[in-house]
Every structure is written in structure tokens, then in C-alpha cells.
Length: 550
Image 1 (cartoon, rainbow, N blue to C red):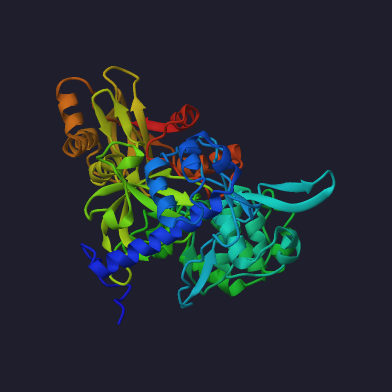
Image 2 (spheres, rainbow, N blue to C red):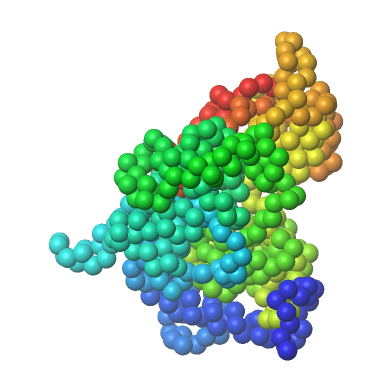
């Protein structure tokens, strides 16, 4: 009998599993190479010149192809262009813009998309998906004949369209239909505020909703902030069955109206419950950093580039062979191709950056995600990993690099009993005075207590959940020093200053996602707030929303 999918990962591969894993991976890689050797990129790219000449006469020599791939194909970075596989893509995926840079574009082909395992339907769900295309490319033969229209769309939205068979040409007729809780037409709304308020409206109107499906958890925080702000209007809409005058929904208002019916009984029920900010229950628990009574589940681990793994118990993922061959670059090793190891050569307990070769045209592409190899699945030997952090996205000083993990752990440990619960934060180097240091920008939970404090020589009454705001910076310094020896030594030697904490206005990160989405013209729920904000324009935007500094 095969081992259970939920069995604990193995710490080492059995001889049988090692053979299976190696054969499966090598056949998969050979299939990718065989297909992509025909692409223009492979035939012309300087990065592949040596490899190209080495395999010219190999034909179907699988081991020869694989050995030359391992020896001659270099690592490629995220800035390479024209990464197309043979044929016309089904859609062009637009990446999210966590870094603040321009979005990246990746071609996606039929047959290389993945459908997550379907869980048994045990409750009614609200699914906040956005499938509005950002543009359409028309491919012509000659001057007039259109061969194909290719949508430009966020990766998650494009994959959903493929899985559901939703052709953009049929969107108008589909908008009258209802899927899950909210009408299909809500997915065609691009205005951030209206998109979230409409989902809130239809979820409130349906008494049976128990499950919320979102791309990022912060979507829930945004939705509940808007719900709290517009609670009265939402309840009236449920009572009368009338869509409120939300912005930029004229193109879907008629379709939405067909699915909202007057329900005075439900409205009275909602008034009895009250808005999220003063109600004990699920809304409050979700709003306050997704507390222990809220169950979080994810169907898998993926990126705009490819699907990486499926959920494995314990916040871990079983790596798939689906549309990418994945190699592992030990973060402690030199960052060159000959330091890569295949799945069967990776060691449990080590941290690795994932490197992808995909059907979609990527060759040894550095994803930038760092994972810990936990072990191997006992059923087929596939690696089981735990996400650790993004690589090279910490704060770099002359004598220290503070990683994302260290920054997250430090702010989370320093604030609960000092300034209170931090809903979201970002940080970057604070060089307003010497020596420079780490500057944190935090948004605090609502319903804060009142404490009389003196900030920068000004006596005022500030709002904090914690009882010791005056200790926050010292606690943060202690946490950073404990996490990073170089920072501790540098602080003691006068190289770094005391870390700073600036509190931003309520709703700042909600508005940040809205602003970034509009300026980058990407999906409504596609924007993530980076742990370390490197974009200077975004830094200025955040600075302008500071309410007070500790």
C-alpha cells in the first residue's frame, strides 16, 4: 500500500524512492528541454549559446541533453526578456508588484496550468476573484487576419479562466450568472473600494456564508475596514435590495441588481449584530490579525512564474512536477549554476533558493523564494518544503544584512504589550540622522486604549493597546540584536542607531494597495505590501501618512 499523503516527511530517501524521483524528474526536464529547444529564445539567446552548440548533434540522446543542461546552462535573472516557449500563449500573466518595480509578464500556455485539489463542499463560500483583462493582444497573419487574441491578465485570474473555461468574449453573457455567493459581474469590477464593498454586500446578504476565499489574507483586512466604514449603507442595501451608488460600477449595475433582493429580516439580524469594530465574533477576530479561531487554508504554493507545490500538513508544501523543473541553490553556497542540486540531492534542514526551468520558457530562472527542505514525501519521494522568506530583500547596511524573517519576528515580538497589536507594517532604512537605522512603519489595530505620552517634546494623548509605549523602541532593539549578531555588534560600536517606529493612520495599507494597483494597472487584489519597501516613491507615500512617531 502506498504511504499516506499525510504521513510525516522522510528525512532521507529510500533507494527505491530515490530512483523513482530521479527518473521522474529527468524525464520531465528532458520533455521541457526538447520542447523549448525549438523556441526563438533558445536559438538566439546569448545565455544559451554554449549549450545550443553542444546539443546540436545529440538529437534524442536524453542523458547527453541533461548533462549539457547541468554543465552549460547558467542561472538567469528576473530581468531577462523574450522568454517565450514555442507556439502562441493562452494568456500573458502579469505579476504582482511587491517590490515596487514595474510588473513582469510571463506567457502561459494551454496544458501547463494547474487545478488545485477540490475540497468537499461543506459550507457556502465567498470567492473574491478578479478576472478583468488588463489588455488584449491581437495576433495577425498578414495585415488583416486575426489568428488569436491573447489576454493580458493577473496570473491568478488567468489560471482561473483556464480552469473554468471562461473565454473573455463571453464575459458579457456570463455576468448575469451567479457563482458561489457573489454574482459573476462583481469579478468585472476593477475599482478597489467598490470591488471589496460589493463582495461585502453579497456576503452579508447571505446568512449561510461560512468560508471566504481570497488571494492574500490582507484582502480580508481591507474588506472589513470598508465594511466597518459603510456598515449602515450596506445594511440598508440588504434591507431594500438596492445596489448602493458605488463608484465605477455602471457597466455591471444591472447585472448585480438581479441578484440582490430585499431582505428586511436579514437586515434586522445584521443591525442586531453590529459592525465589525464593536462586535464580538468572527468579523472582529478576522480583522484583528486573523486570530486563533479563524482557520486559514491554502490549496497550494505558487507564483506568477509557475505552480510550485500543493499543501502538505503543518504549513508545508509538497513540490510538484507540473509546469516547472525545480532545482535547489543552497543559500550558503556561491550563487552559480554548478552549485545547484536536484531534488534528490537536496539535504533536509538546509535553506535553498528555488530555481525554475519551465514549459513556459524560463531557463534556470532564479525565483528569489527561499525554502527549507523539511524532508521527502513517503508516497513518491517528492520534496516537502517550508517557505522561509524572499532572498536579498532585507535591509542592507555596510556591516549587516537584516533579513525579512528577522524583521518580521522582531516587530511582532516587540509591540503587542508596548504599543499594541500591529495589523500590518513595512520598513526601510531610516537615514534622517546619523547613524542610520531600521525604520518601521506600523498600522495598529482599532479600539485602542488612551495613554498620555510625550513624543518629541510634545505632550499629547495617544491611542495604544499596549500599556508601555515608551518601551517599544528598546524592545525592538533587543529583538533585532538577538536575531542578528552583526546588528548588535554594530549598534554597540555606534554604526547603527536606535530603530525607529512611526505609526501610520488607520487604513493606510488598505489605501496603499488601492494606490499601487491603480498606478501599476494590475489586479484589484494583486498587490502585496513588502516587508522591506525599496521603491522611493512608495516610501514617500508612506511617510506622508505618519500619524505619530514613538
